[in-house]
Image (cartoon, rainbow, N blue to C red; front, side, top):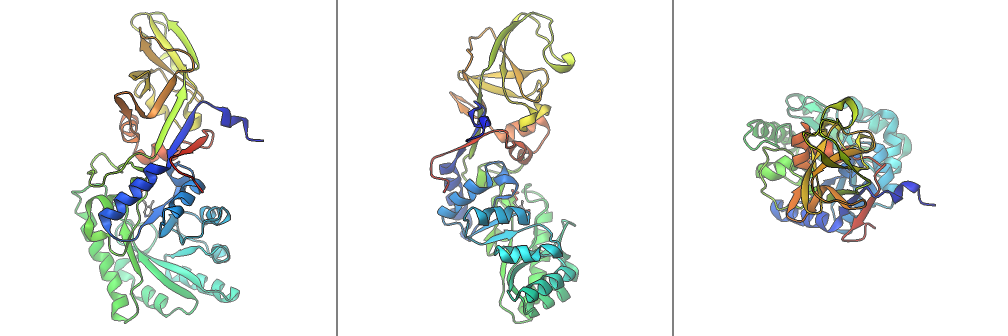
Length: 377
Ligand SMILES: *Cc1c(COP(=O)(O)O)cnc(C)c1O
């Protein structure tokens, strides 16, 4: 029996045709293979349906953060190469190998652990070396990567498929950090050349890199948020034509007149100056709709834009429609277009003091997702 939650009028619609359009746009822009990043439930769009659709579009490679996400992809029938981007624990290596998942090797010690596990299983591990060029997160510093790279090239139980690093400031086209990181990364790759070994896939560019820094595209790019049709930052330039893959909608569940001076919602933070009409929308921070949008966000109903008033509750929030007419069950657009208006994840992030990533990823599984514009499988 389907869960009762699927009856909710509040729903995320994922436009698979937009996802495919964005992939085509990115491909045409960069001219190299794409590793589509589908971590964190495909940025809130649904891990498995998005991955299956991208696979149907001929995606070269997928990237996730954790081994569990990779296993979920394999169990759902995803057969394209999958790289797990996060740091690994030695105890997980057998799981990687059993599910044919590619491993990020981020230190000499982890390389040894992968080799030992692969040898014990009698099956080679496919690895990508992680070089730290400025994030100071996971990876071997580019300035001390030589022994690490030599050991990986010499490894008998590891197949060296890729070498990569991650950009810290590529969302900002004016940051000098990106070219520094590129230089450091290419310096590390030069060790492989000096060894006379075949060059593995070099990949560096996230969405910001794809948008702003052609030199970082190298052998493959790793766009996440851009593939979902959203720009990473307010400073980013729209150099690639993409369309938002997600819309979020609900329905009016209640209507009332609030008298002048009577406050609305928790904390009594907002009250109308004159009698006004207020409708309730059944979505809240318990769904991942940010509470930071209290008295800041707006919604679209009947082609008009109306403000959220008072605090966003766990399961609902209120909207001031002034003297307009709105009926129960009217469609409410929270992300998406209606009439001449549109609300984007970028705008909500700006209003909430968040980044667009948080808006998308925060929308949780209490909201049913429906897929349009193509088959997810
Ligand atoms: C998340 C992630 C990406 C994608 O980042 P976007 O900014 O969403 O494009 C690429 N590479 C790595 C290593 C990541 O962790």
